[in-house]
Amino acid sequence: MNITATLNYFKTNEMNDLTVLKSEIKSGSDEYRRNYNETIQIMDDFKRRLQNTIERNDDPYVKKHKSKGKLLARERINALIDPETEFYEFSALATNDLYEGKFHSAGIVTGIGIIHGIESVIIANDPTVKGGTYVKETIKKHLRAQEIAYEHHLPCVYIVESGGIFLPEQANVFADRDHFGKIFYNQSRLSAAGIPQIAMVMGSCTAGGAYIPAMSDESIIVENQGTIFLAGPPLVKAAIGETISAEDLGGAYAHTHISGVADHMAKTENEAIQICRSIFENLPKPRKTVQISEKFEEPVYPAKELYGIIHSQSSRWMNPYEIIARIVDGSKFREFKPNYGKTLVTGFAKIKGQTIGIVANNGVLFSDSALKGTHFIEMCSVRKIPLIFLHNISGFMVGKDAEHKGIAKDGAKMVHAVANTNVPKITIIFGRSHGAGNYAMAGRAYNPNLLFTWPNAKISVMGGRQAAEVLWSVKKNGSDNEEELKKQISERYEQEGSAYYSTSRIWDDGIIDPVDTRKMIALGLSIAANKEIPDYKPGIYRM
Ligand code: COA
Image (cartoon, rainbow, N blue to C red):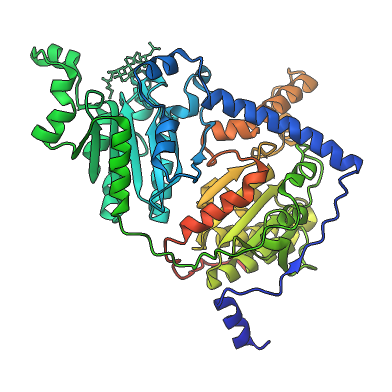
């Protein structure tokens, strides 16, 4: 194949000569069984946590809400999206270890659903969590959903029922750049970018909660249920002495007939949902920049076998080829530089028919693996091929040999390439994530379009044992007990390194079942195809 033919070959996005990966795992082996049993336990814990967050049938706030004949946030979403389609929820376990575990999912449900065939971001307040009010993480989750909408040109539906700011937390949520006001700033910018902003008012929307429908392009309000006002009746009475009911002050009739703050009046929640769906029926359909193929091969190996490959022990290796084989079409992979820089695996594959470049960790990053990664990322950037980062990294190599070979400048090249590439990036943390390796492998700060974590993952600046050694070595006051101090530090790192700690603070878009990885990557590729990829412009590499 000559050079021109090679370029055409990539331009047509055809890669028929991918090799089927040959799995080497033995499902009867002790190692496979040990991993499988451990992962089943990890998954049971994950599912129990999700269930406790999502299905709160005994929660008095849920009972009170349902007793009024109202739908719960996730029920509203399920009624809104197309039948037989799935809602891809983000960060369901946000705030799982904060606020005494009482701010379930940070009081807001966000994700992507398909409405009349259009992939859309849906943001629904959960009124059963402190009246749908906003703490710091609620805002972060709301802003992240809007960011995903902006990056992928996805219409937004806001299902609103919110008392605005959670007042005891006002110092953490009101005045800073990425605080409450950013929600409305984003709504304005999204609207100006031609991204539809639709609101459904399903309950009381007070103060900040009132601005969400008011800032929307089109809004729907439910009669005798939805209200919009800057101050509710008690505050109005106190401020100006006026006595008025909530419905008369800011109900559906007042806003659709008198003030014009809302556009459509619905008799019930279900009618509001149908009006919203009919708005979508008339929205222009996004033009995909990549032809999404209907025909593709499933992986040759079952995804469930991932449970026998992964584990949570930091010191044991996980084979990235076995993971790739259970994610990509036909388990086919064309490796790039297979014999060089082997601690990083790079190559091309397809997911649901769409060509991707894969960067997967296979050990510590050395200079050669970092250079190979840089080369591959540049290649995908120029060819405009989305990148999938399979992230399991303890960091860059340390020591005299590595330093003198220039590990710092070679690692920096990979970080440069990841930062400057314009292609869609999807990051899956399947093992460890430590040190600058987190940056080179498209960690959160490197703006991956989506970032998901597996429940066995560990995320911290370094491992607990290493941190204990470093902190002991820099300690000036020798009065502490060495063993005790190291134990405390290790335990703290273990707790803070957990995937649940990360997702609680929304350092990811959620923890996923490894079995769902292919599906979530396919979602990311599909929404990314709504936007043109700009040309690649690198920074200056230190040579
Ligand atoms: N800040 C802090 N806590 C709030 C709150 C707010 N803005 N709004 C509601 N809550 C809390 C309530 O104290 C209650 O907590 P508790 O059960 O631990 O006592 C919980 O949320 C549920 O509120 P409740 O009033 O029982 O629920 P409701 O469904 O009857 O009414 C609201 C919900 C939002 C309509 C109502 O609580 C309200 O009007 N809140 C004030 C809204 C406001 O003025 N916001 C201005 C902020 S910018």
